[in-house]
Image (cartoon, rainbow, N blue to C red; front, top):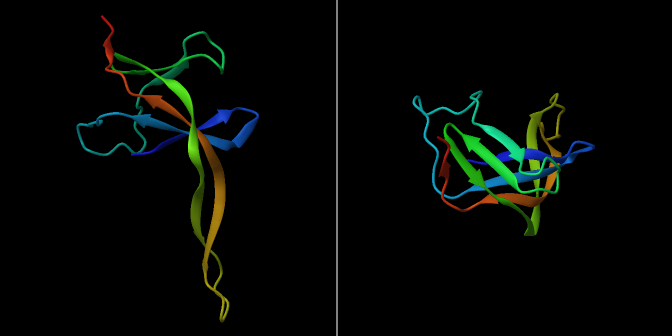
Length: 109
């Protein structure tokens, strides 16, 4: 599962991916439209340590530059003309960084 967030609010096309070690499970197996958790920064600035709270678990992460950036593409259909491919790909954003959460979650009690 890939989760994409804007890296900065003033640059919505500059995305960041969230990388989790392990797996997430949902009762019905479908995450689409579901609330996953709360994403915040430890010292309330964009350059702070990211925290992800899922249920009663807190994960601490860090922002890491990716060795190879990639584009997030969206496949769309357009009106069919003779001799023209109806499929069009649009770049929705560029991913240069990822939030990496690789430590064990801490319980919030």
